[in-house]
Length: 303
Image 1 (tube, one colour):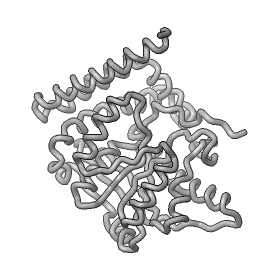
Image 2 (cartoon, rainbow, N blue to C red):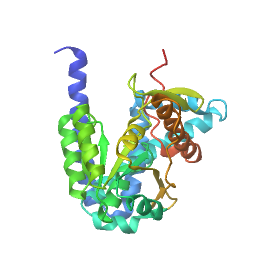
Image 3 (spheres, one colour):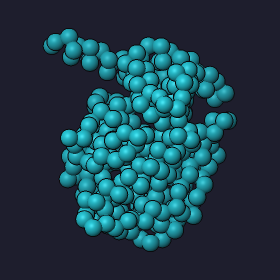
């Protein structure tokens, strides 16, 4: 085993151990101190996670370098780490108390969701790694909606199994993005059952998607929501979960996005993915610390 593999093994063991320690702490400390614990965890992570801190600052520079000062960018990066820590703590807390989600998470624009479901072809919820998005699915599930999400499995299989079981406890279905054929078939079945499927399209998609404008740069983006909507006639809704000043959350459903037909299938996909991506960018601009900047969104480049 070479040095790189040894580091990977220790890194994954450390993450696994950290999750279990944090989960234990969250179970025993009073609820009023959850966010105090999260603040300390975020400060420690920002200091120790040099690689992710560097990615966050570089990503923010790409997006806001011409608009914000270095100090403003550092503040957003710190707040991003803070929100990630708060989100992790909340998940551990609510996994065992899903009945409290209705009190903690409100919904705005619910009529858009219900009207879309009334059409009977399922609903594709287009979103991003924005806010505490797992709570969004949990809140919908405890509210009586049949919801699932397309997710890329974590590199650590043991960690992934822990979170898969937690999601299942909520009533949230997990559909893995690979193998591709299985993912597509399961997703189509969910939509034919007139259920909800959550698809984030804000991460680098390599050469398999289309390049659209995102913060003034070309970003490789998945085409799944538009292709699935064309194939199944499912409704397309953009939604986000936004943290409030008191650490409650608000889910916002935008009105249904109507597909814009163009001369060719590829152009139709490109135009509509750009439309969805522009909505996502608008929310990130409004709430920059809510997005996961610790990802190389612009890693792939057009040929």
